[in-house]
Length: 458
Image (cartoon, rainbow, N blue to C red; front, side):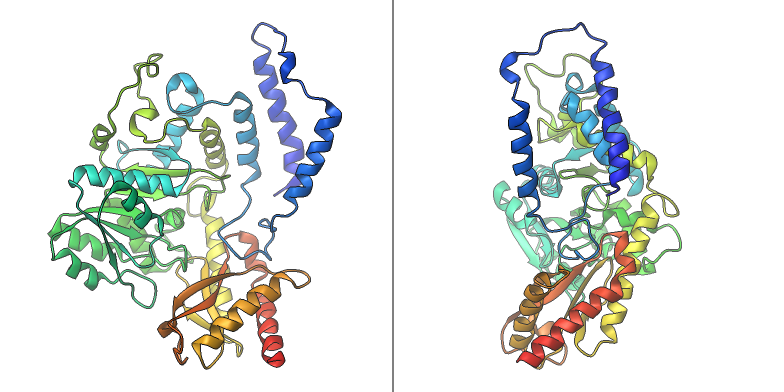
């Protein structure tokens, strides 16, 4: 994050809000809210010390989980709105940020090729957004079963349990995509009312074959929900030349024919946590949410976002931060968000290419997006598991530290490896920062060196 930008614009944001506040009659702040500045200095120092216990999510040597800092513009916008503290549930809780949310929802509808009269809103994250999609499906399918892949996010099984909806887990192919033939077999039994396709699995970044699933939808008539919480923003690259493969571009473009889609701006949308979004293609879905409140929705006859949301109070600051970010970095392939994502794709492709030519490492599968799965070369799955865990630990303790993550996989997916244990841990690198493109060689070399040292030590 650019410290110079923040040091210049955060004070300006505070000044702008203070100027707005001065438009109102002066009043005396309640003394019970006052704190001693010496105490504030002391506690702030302790707070800063505690925050130093975080891993360096901002640094390219951190390639562990799906974490990175928000864009400075988002921080400035969030702080400015947070000083007002609007609530986007109803218009009287935040008229300006509610309008900004409607604007960014229209942008997101356009990103996925949904009609401009589609509906949606921001959420606290993908979990709640997916809950809403599954709840709508339950209401519209009389509680029929929900099918999702074995590599889909665990939230779907959890939320279906919360909703009391039966589930059908569909096995995946070795590349991490849902097995469409297995899906058709499940559909033929007649119990499935909703299929969840994943556009960017969190384990490996795989994208399900959405065009093939749509072909089944035309015959079986189920609802199709797309969980694009992680990968959704890559759709900006689907309309022309980019590092995104043609096959993946076609799959992202096919989301336009789905019934609903979830995307997380707090991942590739450069936003602070938490900022997710749920979008519905058909505006008539709003009738499913219909409810009334005895003390809201009075200040305006216009549409209130709370009328199509399961969540009630929601931070207007999240909408303001996303709106400001997309004004500066629009959802376009050749400028704005597009070049950022092209860089992360190139980083993953370069990383995978280096692993592919390595003597110490083996690529588990070719990356679809910007997550790479790979493992130390070994003869037995148990050795792969042991070495992967040891590499993960050793690199975090190295100087400078290098941060990876681990992924548990079926040991039968490991090529030329004896599956002497059913599950083995492999290494996982999430290269979601554009700065990763410049350090892929350094990252792979660090992993190779760790494997060599561990192998030599026995």
